[in-house]
Length: 124
Length: 439
Image 1 (tube, rainbow over the protein chains, first blue to last red):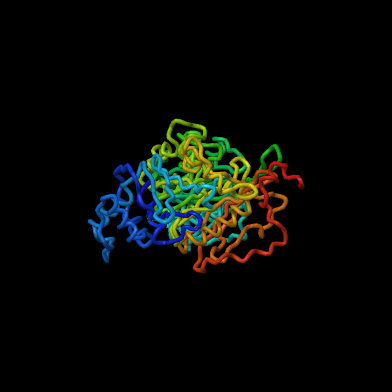
Image 2 (cartoon, rainbow over the protein chains, first blue to last red; image 1 turned 90 degrees about the vertical axis):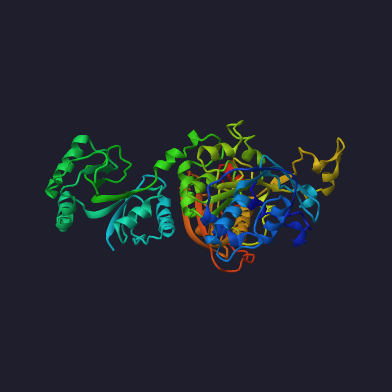
C-alpha cells in the first residue's frame, strides 16, 4: 500500500465520526519497502489539491520520511519538492502491519501490501 | 473542414460513436458527423476533421476504428467513384513519385486476389509512377467495397457502395492481442475481455495525470488498461481472494501483481484494498478522475455487501473462540447479504457524484433484460450527465456500457425517480436464473 492511498482512507466504523481522530489512520508495526518508480510529475501536480497535506505531513513524520512542511507556491517547477513528494507517496510501500484508528481503536491489517478494511458485524 | 473516412471494426457496433466521441474529447480533436444518418450496418462513417494530422491523432487509441482516410471519393459504381476522384486531380501530384500501396477490402464479401488486382489496375488513371511497396509505403490507399451483411447464403453480387481514400491514421486494435485474457498471467471467471476493457479505458478518458478507481476490481482488468494509457489506478473489492490470487483460475502467481508485472504498469497501478463499497473508507471530497467498473450482477459473482439476513447480531463479533474475540481472529470474515442490482447501481451513482472531480467520468456496465428494457431504466442523478449508453446483446439479456460525467451540481441525494415500472435490472439475478421468463 502506498502513502497516497493511505492519505485517502479514513476509519468508517459506525459512530466513529470525530474527523480529527478517524483520519489519518495511524500506522502500527509496519514493514516498509522503497520501490523505485518512474517520476510522474503530471500526476503529482494534478493530485496535489486532492492530497490532505497536514495528514500526509503527520504520517510521514511518524514513519521518519522527509517531506516539506508546506507545499511551495510553484510546485511544478520545484524539482526537490517533486522528488520528495514522489518518493513519499509513490515509492514508499507499506507491506505489512496495521492502521489504527485513534477514535475507536479499530485495527485495519495490511497483508502483502493490501489493507483489509472490512468492518466487523458490530461496526456497521 | 475536409472529409475523412472512418473504417470501423466489425464488432460492438453500438459502441462505435460513443468511443469516437470520447476520443474526440480525450485528444482535443473536433469531429463532425451526421449521427442520425449513420447506420451500424455500414463499416464506414464519413466525418469532418480539420486536418490529416488531427485525424491520425483522433483515432490513435481507438479500439473500434481500424483506420481513418482522407476522403477521395465514393459512389454506387466505380464510374461514379472515379468521376468524383477525378474532380480533384491536383491532390494526386503529391504522390506521383512516392512509393504506394493499395488495400482493397470487401465488407460482406471476400474478394479474390484476382478481383483485388483488377480493382487496383482500374485506378491506373491516377498515373502514379512510384514503386509499389507492400510494407512501409509512403502513401497507402484504401478501397472498400461495401456489400453489406445479408442472411442469404451467398453474398450480394453488386456492392451497395464503394469508398476510396488515402489512409492517414490507424487505431490501436493491436492492443487486443497484447491484453488478450488467454495470455494473461492471472484471471478469474469474471475477467472482462481485452477489447471491451480497452474501450472502457477510452470511455473513461484514462490518460497521464489522471486517477482511476474500480470499486469492484475483481482481477483488476480496468486497472491494467487504464494504466496502460497513462492513468494511475486504484481498486477495491469485498473479496480479497480475487485480488490476492487465492481464488481465480491461476493461483500461485500472487494475484493481480502478476498482471501488473506482465504489462509493466507497476508504477501506475497504485494499490488495492479489501472493503465493501457500500461501507467504504474513502474520505470526503472529489478524489477520482474516473470510476471504471463492472459491478457484479449477482449471477457469476455473488453480489454481496456486509450485513446479516434479518439484521446484524453485534454480539456475534465478541464470541470468544480459542481465547480470541471472534472479530479479532485472523480468519474472521464478517457476514454478508445479497446486494440487489438496482441498489448496487444507485449506490454507485451516489458514490460517483461525491467522489468524482467535476468533469470526471463514471463508466459502468448495467445488465438489462432485452424484452423489458426501456431507456428510463438507466438511472440518473442530478450531479451526473449521461453521455453514452452502448448495448452488448446476449439474446434474452444485454449489458449496457453507461458513461456519465460529473457536472457542477452539488451532490445531494437524488430525488427518487418516479418510475413507471421497476427497471429491467431490478432483481436481475433472479430473472437470469429464471431464464428471463416472467416470474
